[in-house]
View 1: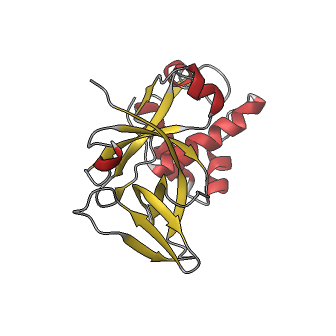
View 2: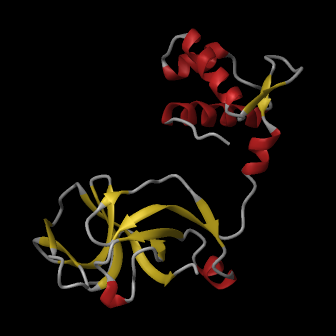
Length: 203
């Protein structure tokens, strides 16, 4: 199915919430919620139909979630890949799920909220994390000093050994050609997204 824009996703999510009562919201209801003109909402609904998320039906207001979209929402096997992460210099962390990988029942049962990121770069090679590898991440906002974790810097993500000190946060690579990344402790643009609990590569 064709990808949606952020606004299209928000409108579709609003429609789904309303459909819990088995009533498709009117264009005016959607327009009022998003403080938009009704004509603009009409165009958004047309896009959602064109991209395969909505379809015509004979019921009142004439639209419903498409069978294809409903099927796509069924829980897939494996953990989600939510984009790529840098081991080198940070790159934009794409939060859209791109695929799923089955990593076995043990990880899924113990860490149901875990996700997978693909590594780009070679700054963690001395820890056995190579360019193109996949890391399994357990989401959490704290970490013990020296553990390998995912840090978000503004809207970008990177995998490093993380040290949180009284006055600073240090992101340390395991490749001598890269320098440590040092940030002021409490910097609102720097946060810990999770701890790396596994690493694997596809052959």
